[in-house]
Image (cartoon, rainbow, N blue to C red; front, side):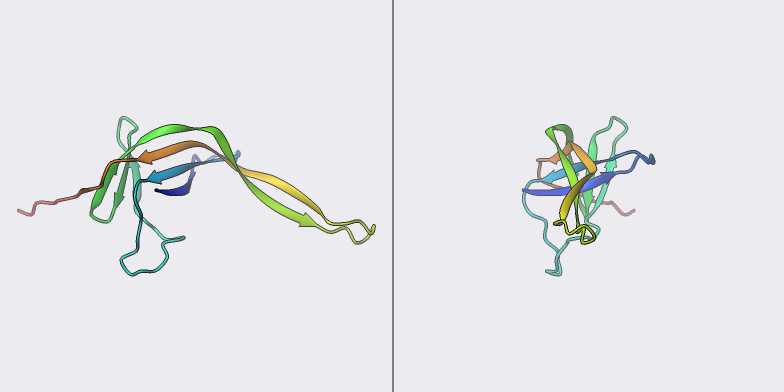
Length: 116
């Protein structure tokens, strides 16, 4: 199973919501390089809101579920206050909440195009 975090871009300046994409099996690069930070595929939603993931020449159909309990994405910052001879302190800022999970459990289906 592979889990990938994605940002949900709604255009607002409020706290960002992220989602987890869960794919059964493994994702491997055809060149053998790491896939971290690279475009893997295209996530689209049908008219009925069903998630569809297209990776290369394969298509996967998924469903959206709630991530219960939600997961918080935190950023840790350390500060040292040498002016007052105090030890360093650590602050945590919530960057986003992960409330949804998009699950693709079925095997990918090949996309076949017919040329006329």
